[in-house]
Length: 410
Image 1: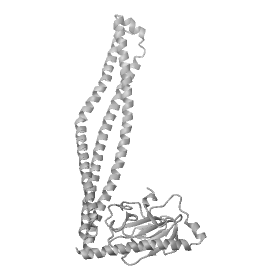
Image 2: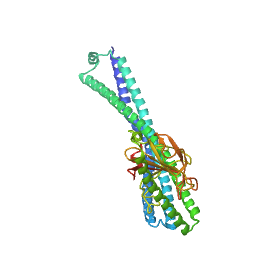
Image 3: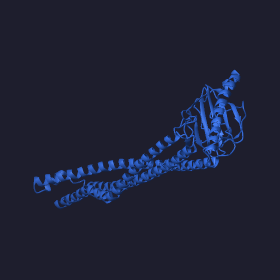
Image 4: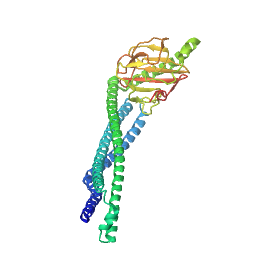
């Protein structure tokens, strides 16, 4: 090999070395191009966080207002104050969820920018490494002895060997960068997939919050329509509600005891609980009122003994577990419910039913259809002061109400 050829070879290596070293510079330039956009996104994210803090502070204040108004819930004015604060709080829930959606969209933009940068860097690193290896491989017949003989001095030889080592180090660094970028790219894609899932869940929550707001507005309209803004009529309806609730509780306790006592031992074998637990009596949906809910408007009269599951008027109700029907009776627009007793002292109650498909003493298997839900004010089985279409669902252990959510699949 000629001295000229060897010099050309080292010139190529010099060019490649510059190419590899400038890869990091190009990477930096790419980052600079997106810095302004990233900074803008970060500023928007910080602004959204501040909004969320303000919303949470306002929600806490409305919660205090509701608690204070509950002390006067036996008056029409107090009830209106509760509903007004619930409406305001529901609007804040909508604002909060929308803000979270905006926040998630901003984070998705950030991740997409990062993924784009990583993909560009990976392609450049791959290209630089491929060119370098290809050209080095093309000149693989150049031996160390040839390089030594063709150099003017040992110093020139050592300088060139040192530069060759630097080029090899550059390849190693580029390979490391490539591995890191590919790992970060995969992480970015996983983060993006999770954020998109979060976005879908928030969209569902937003729809539920909007439904809750409309429900609270309807509650207020129904109370005003029922009472005609009369304190006397309001007190009469409250007394009716309390009477029906007390009557239902007494019936549930007595019926359970009576039916369990009269069941033969052979029948009791059918009461074995499903080891997998209860099933949702209506499709799993938004809980409008929880067990012993502190925001329950009539808590001053009685604790809320179950959960209210949002369900459209006429939604199919199924038995949460196998058992015998202890109560199934309609009584006009008064509160109507179905009660089923199960094994191990467990019983379930399905309230605000608009239609019943079973009769007392019937045996039902888990998942069997037992009726249709209701709750729309003024309709069959709704009862006084219903909060719109839903199923009131109770679980009782030895006659005592317990939290249904501890028995239902989550």
